[in-house]
Length: 94
Length: 364
Image 1 (cartoon, each protein chain N blue to C red):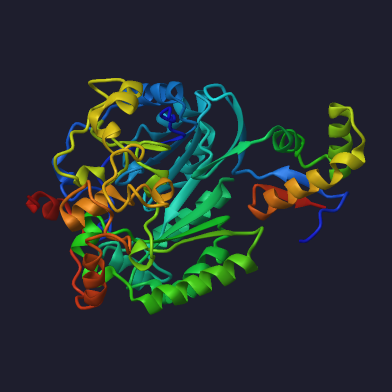
Image 2 (cartoon, rainbow over the protein chains, first blue to last red):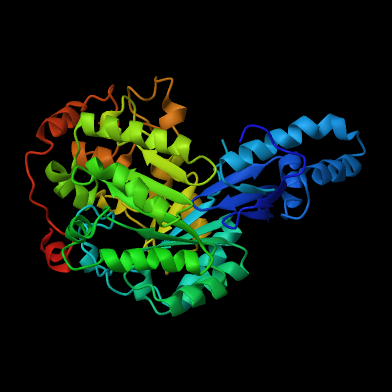
């Protein structure tokens, strides 16, 4: 899997969970024996990975949320999804 | 520098276990500890842990499923918002219990298997038949909707079967495979001559693991941890003493790591006496090796000191007799010859001392 397709429907893996860490005031991704501290973009992407929304839809939703053009975040979102799917935190259903 | 708060808590619910693996990370004198924490005490520990900053609770033992209150404890952890993981030997997992754990909100369930076939696996677990039950447990984990992590401790006797072990994990549909080369603390140290692999064995296994990891990318995560006897520099043990992890043992002792009890002369405070927060920040034992100020030479002047913190304190104590010295696993350690000598002895003894209560009570 080298490129993320616009029509893919990313889903947060069953083993992983998003959490707001009130003590540290950070967004976290929790998984077996590990914790990932998420930057805002990564968290926002993951929050939209429900297996229903396509990648294209996620990009558009974030573009609206950030009040910017979809082109401006297209590459970043796909890179985030690529990394997360390689670590098996996100599955990419077609 | 401000002391960081821990992310992860290991709860050793009991030291009791139906199996007798000769590399167990429980202390050699585990059988001396009675008065396990009760349900309400564990619940309080979890509540304190969350306030301290812990986001993840790992449950293990001994065999945690020997405790009837596991679902109740998990439920409490889940209500607190903790990510929960339970590691079991698998022999006590029934369909009913698996469903109870799921209903209680357990996030992840790990099953340990000793080898790729019944004969070898049963032998390494102490002799009684356990392999079939473990396979059944692994299938139950998947059937119940959990993600399956398989834990396989690699040592001299099974490292040659790493391909078969990986195939087994694939066949079971594991999402994650931990190939953990055994650390030589406690029981494993007693059995080191029989358990320590050769450099050739370890290097071959690393190649196999890397190739499988690439092939299975996105399907099964493979974690291969090289034993530090074969590395030039030690690992940062648990990312550093008192930085990310803490353990509460079956009797309530609070430890920076699960094997720290082996270090003579350290006093471990107990959750029955003091809050987790106070112990983490203020106890003598947690403060003693935290950070880098305490480091001896050559660590103090070493560019790696913030990377590995001088290595493992347990290993320094067990091999060099002194928890304050550089981990002998480091090639720069004054006592590094202890590792070289151990490597020369590897494979010279096949006899294993299994982890039994009788053996444990005989230990001074």
